[in-house]
Structure formats: C-alpha cells, structure tokens
Length: 139
Image (cartoon, rainbow, N blue to C red; front, side, top):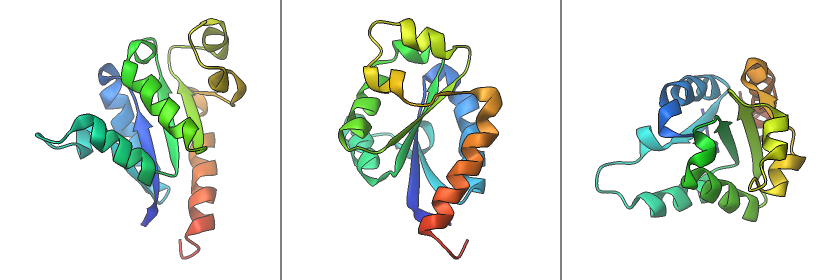
C-alpha cells in the first residue's frame, strides 16, 4: 500500500455508511485514507487531528449531499486543503452541479472544479489509481 498517498474523506455524519464504502474502494486503488469515524480516537483533539491529517493527505474527497452542505467542518476542511493547494475532488450525491453553482455561500473554487455524480465514481477511482501508481511504481 502507498501509505504516502493519503486521501482525506470529508462527509456529513449522516453519510457515514456511504463514506465507508468509498473508503474501501480508495484502499483498493492503493491509497490510504483518513476518515474521521475510523481514525479519530476518543480523547483526541478533533480539530487538531483534522488539521494534522489534512497536512499529511495528498488530496481531499468531499461527499457533497444535502446534509453535508450544512456541516461546518466540510467547509473548514475544504478551506484548509485549498489553502495548501491540494487536489479537491467533489462527489455529488443527491445534488447536481447546478445546485452547487447556485448556492451563494459555496466558495468559488468549488464552482470551478470538475465535480462528478456518485454514479460516475468509478472514473474517480480509475484516476486515483493512476495518481497512486505515479508516486508508487511498485504497484
């Protein structure tokens, strides 16, 4: 496994099951993951752990759902990753690119990147596998 290629998965608590399924597929692509429900222990400083893991991660995968848009940590995580100039991949589930484009509080960066529908998630996994292979040729 390419432990040096970490994908930080950002999601709303309501979407934990879906996030865990995505996590399994990311691991099959050869990357490691950070998923709060799996990687933050009781007693950890939640916000400090989030910032540490964002710093270690190569990219952010955001699961955009009607619920996640209302989750402040989603926006904090996007801002932290964007500030580090890392890749932000957005997966739409129950939303469309038009929904994202018309919400006034959505940062402009999200209106510029290529967001994909969850039904096209295999495309993300194929591209991720190439990125992982590029940094870990033994795969």
